[in-house]
Image (tube, rainbow, N blue to C red; front, side, top):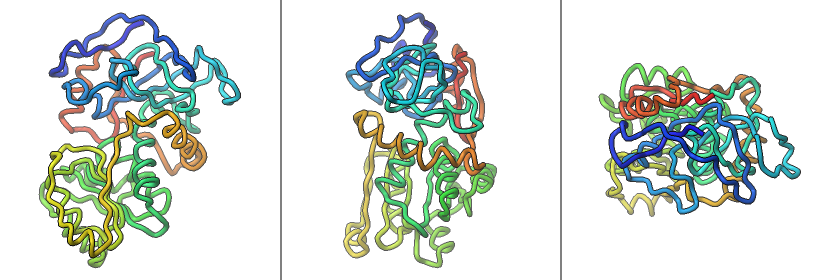
Length: 326
């Protein structure tokens, strides 16, 4: 099969087309003939040598795919060979065939093409796990999304809005802020020209937000603590601004704040399977009702993975970047 491999840590050009044998299936896995593969920030970090591959995962990049089930034991899953699915995987997505845990496969949402579906698993699994499970965003609560123009950001904005929450989002340009608002954010906040903490406090009459989804960390954390409501929760899922932060523990104690975080890739299949079940039951129907939509900025053929990564690193996009394989 054709695949994209990381020849050595480095710039996008280290992504090269190669020939690889088909994946060998492990217990509980199915083989997917890949139609498309989503690109995510962890793929870039892996290419740079900053995101170690789990010991039992493929060394090929790619954490989400959509395509046709062509092999594997399907048991009583309800799937059959030939079905179109999208799946969260530990790696190996940038290829014509990919092994995926059966329990991490989902049917394509209503009205969603394979190209579009390939952009869903990584962000929807991440947002559901962190915003709704870990941070427990509840009825009547508000959410601040850092990096609203990213794949994670557009998913969080849409999903929280569809479930009835007030959402605010930060972005790095006025155009991106408007795009966040078109997706459902009440207010896009330009972090280059505005103090997001001050804006949030103003928009909430001084109360602050209940949950913050943060991909930045670093010096953002202190300001995020300031704009959390009492009993608020800050959940960190990436460290684009650095791993070190100053935290006012006095506020954490007095106002009963929670600072937490998680990474998805190393979690066991059983953990991800529970998320898949929740998505299938509570989120996938929202696509059919027109409350959610895939947001694709641009697609590239598989052999142009380097160009796709260069676009990802430019941060010029709003939404997802995808590789078209079939």
